[in-house]
Image 1 (tube, rainbow, N blue to C red):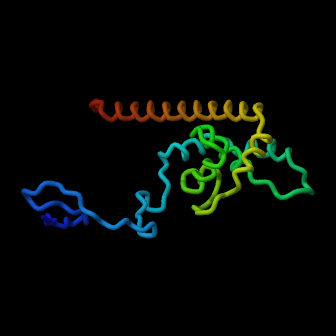
Image 2: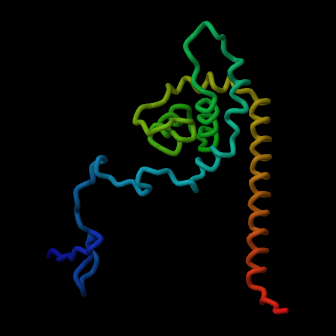
Length: 180
């Protein structure tokens, strides 16, 4: 027995009145037709976007660059890519290979490591994470953490000041006008 379905204006199938739900076999959606919920824009509320705004990438680029000779070897990957990849690995608790796979599949992680656009390609080989760990020492990580905490506190204080100012204005607007 097949149930008849009505198509609503938002393209969802609903059973006709009085019918119970039954599983409907439908072909899988090809990736090219999969609609992204953010319509090509990253959400500013995403944890990776928020964290990327807290990390002072440029402040520590110079210290990272001191690990490399200017005239020999292949050009190194940027500091943001190196540190960002290590943060992703630690935060998600995954292996080096899985870190690269996650970055390859996730536009938020690609943004976090400093890529400008989404790519289906791995940004680097998993073996480079070993080199990233060698070049980014504990002292540098501690400095970055301290700077992130400081930046976060500054943002919290600024938000608190804005909120207090808003409440003060709102209170003044609600006061009755005194006539002379």
